[in-house]
Length: 127
Image (spheres, rainbow, N blue to C red):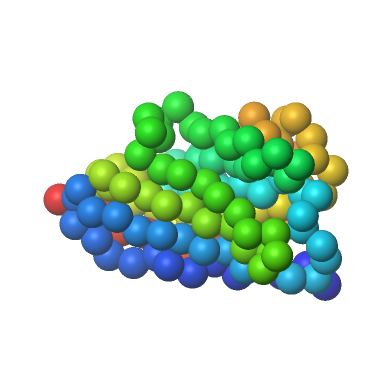
């Protein structure tokens, strides 16, 4: 059974940093696209970042503007999201997800392309 468990969320002041982790189990993820999404109350789920399997290319939502970095450790089936220069509008529940078919749509942030999702971790940025 595939499981994704996010951690690293919390409360941080504006301008601060957080590093989210997503530990995956239940299959070999080294060939999968891994992604991060977020959802704030009353808003639609939003693409944050994705990373490919073969060459670790990364793609980001337009709002990121160089503040976030996605990375992966295939040996430990873990994907990370380093978030710097956080703003109050970054407050949301952050979810990691896996696309087991390495689709371009997943890399470009289409959430329906992802097969498995974690439960999410709350990030709150105070002003």
